[in-house]
Image (tube, rainbow, N blue to C red; front, top):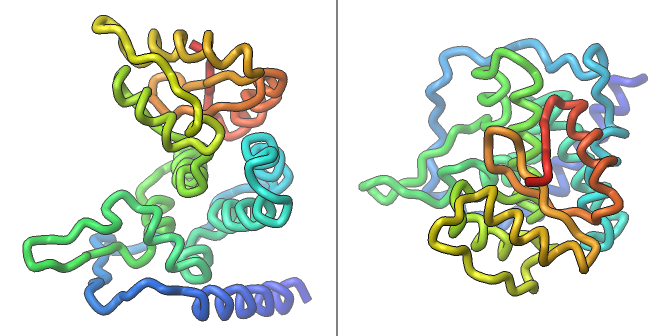
Length: 232
């Protein structure tokens, strides 16, 4: 029964996606460097990762930026990417390839060469679930402008234009001796009166902005996929 329902869902979603795709793939070449993909799926249940966790993260980050229907769509995508990367690449092919780093970059022959199974590839090359979960979620959240990246002060400043929650806020320019974390401290001084806070990943530079009152809840949620966000 469960397999039948999954088949029906897969067919329904794929039919919708296939009809709604507008990308012209006539100049796209799908070519993989992976000799053999993983056959096993991520151990979500065994590791205590469930759809409710993703729903909580996206509800908090999406807040009033997206409707309940839109947030559910994001959650559905993220959960399928977590639980079955192979099926995700099949059902959401158009979405999946557009979230990879080289989307839109053509070679000397004017060809766009893409990995046909980008999320399955990431799952294959990662030896552990948690780095894959973090990467998959960051790609999906980035597509919906709920996470950004900046590894120096200027990069951080420009990155806030990519977040829905801060794109209409004018931040002061970084000082000459600012670096990513020091500039984020300045930004947080400006965000605090608005009831917001910017958080950044430890040892990396993924950045999210959330309501100040939700900071502890969101950081605890991300820790469940071993992703540490801190306030600089």
